[in-house]
Image (cartoon, rainbow, N blue to C red; front, side):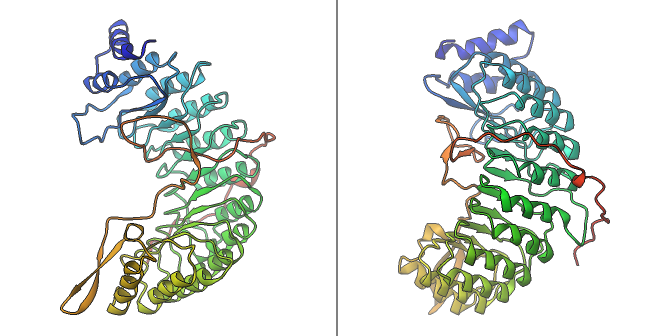
Length: 435
């Protein structure tokens, strides 16, 4: 297929199958030159141009166009109206021997359980796709179970994003079990699952056991899981033994000073953890003091830390500023949403003005009024993905997708495993409201 003909080919496919041409798709294809590996940017929330969101008919036509294309290695279909039928067409594309897709972003579409099932089955025999994002699609517990089972036989996928997908306790535990033997997945996001309340937080026990033996997972997002200090204590047991994890996302949970105390023991003993997100918890001063002590410890290799909105006051924030001076490895810190009294403002102004804390690596900026120092909020935040790894493909696109997959080393073979009865019949009680 000649690179300059892809738009004409799309129009011909639409005419052949009596599908209406989507002007947004046609325009993007006209602007695409297939001289290199490219990602087709067709997100439905593009505010810089007139957008007609993709539906299943558009996906059908595009999948026919891309069957023999070796140049299109990424599809960015975020924020469209793709349902299970469209997911089925994409699954057929992934099953083609000629498929060259390395990244597929379907964030916030209308894909549900059946769509997740067909995608999971297609990935059992696919050896090219490195990144799959289904975040925001209500695939539910059964759809997630199909994807977890897929990890038994797929040795290629490096990144899987399933945030806000209505995962239940059973499927969350299933991922932990699969990752005990899967050695190819490097990034997993299961933020905001629909977990039932349990005093034992059994799912954290399974993740702890997984982390103790897994040597490939680099990035783990556990935000909005309702994790408490008990769960953090369980998780820390596995984190102490893990030497691969670099990025741990624990934002928007129920962690307090006691949970942070267990986590800081990990920071002192585990030199691999580099990025920690504790935003929107409630660690307060005592939790910040634990963090400051751990960061000052010579065994801590933490590079980036977010403690925004944690009800931390002067003593805790000052301990973090002192820790930054003692440990030069910590280069990024985000503190907005806490109690920024003048002593704190002065301490962070000194860090910024001295060059110890570059202004682009924090979310505050100092200014002075009538001899008093204040901090203003900056639009900087902790990066959402660990990019110490290579990009999943050498793709070109008009903008970089925010869910691009990352690579480390070549995936190793693993033996096939079976879902165990551990994930069944969990003894749980309904979720209790927050106080």
